[in-house]
Length: 113
Image 1 (cartoon, rainbow, N blue to C red):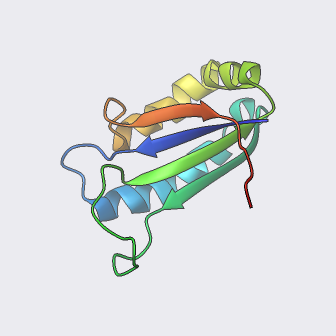
Image 2 (image 1 turned 90 degrees about the horizontal axis):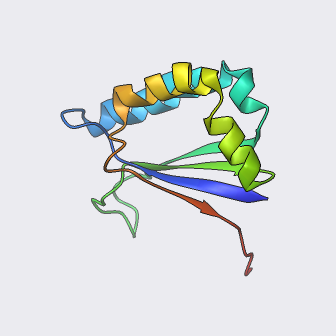
Image 3 (image 1 turned 45 degrees about the vertical axis):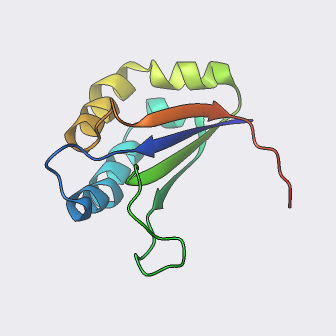
C-alpha cells in the first residue's frame, strides 16, 4: 500500500479561515461525488491545523495536509488520470489551493510504534 501526502498551501489572497472551511465543507463533497476517482482510493483524510494555542502550533509553510491511500503506484496514476478527476476534482482544487507552492509525495509507511 502507498500513500500520497499533500502539503497544501492556500491561494494568494484567500484567508486561512476561508481555505479551511472550503476544504472541509466544499472540497470534501466534491471528492465524494466522483466515483471514477474514488474507486482507486482506499482512504482519504484531511489533516486540518489544530488550535493555535497547542504546544507545537505556529505559522508554517503549509495550511493543511491531505493523505490518500492506494493499493499501488499504478492505482495512483490511474486515479489522477481519470477524466472526471481532471474535470471535476482538479478544477475544484484550483479554486482554493496554490498548486505551485504545495508539495506532494508518494510514500510507503514504516510503522515504528
